[in-house]
Image (cartoon, rainbow, N blue to C red; front, side):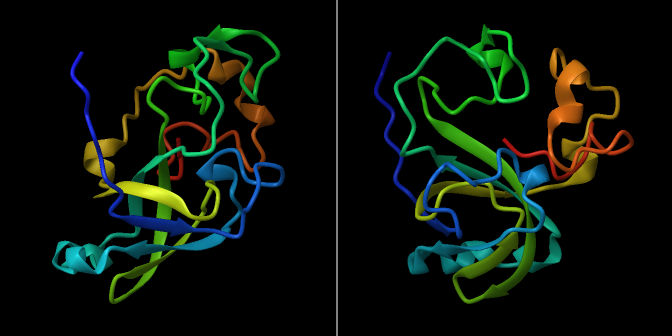
Length: 166
């Protein structure tokens, strides 16, 4: 296959310098604050972003181990195929999280519910749009048996929530 190259559009700054103590998912981050420091050359791309309450962040998992095709994920004690999990040890280590947008100051976006390490390379930002992104009838596979293990998961809001990160 052909080589694909991406360049970071900015950095995600968070209080988490190591995996220990970092939230596993944005929905369990408990409001942990962070910020996006976007490349100043991209400021025009932020026009109208302040009208959104949530953003989808795509980022490079630059501090993960080698890829593994089967993993025992954090919510279970059984092995699953990598693509049926959100484990970070992927062939293309791309992370995805839905965060809350608090404010915008120039090329700095103040965000909450961060679940990534400090200085994570940001690849893209997309607005979270419930009418496009929420799937009320979505099934959650083996997670449905284990989601109660996620800190902050409630019986009513654990599936289809806009805070579900990646």
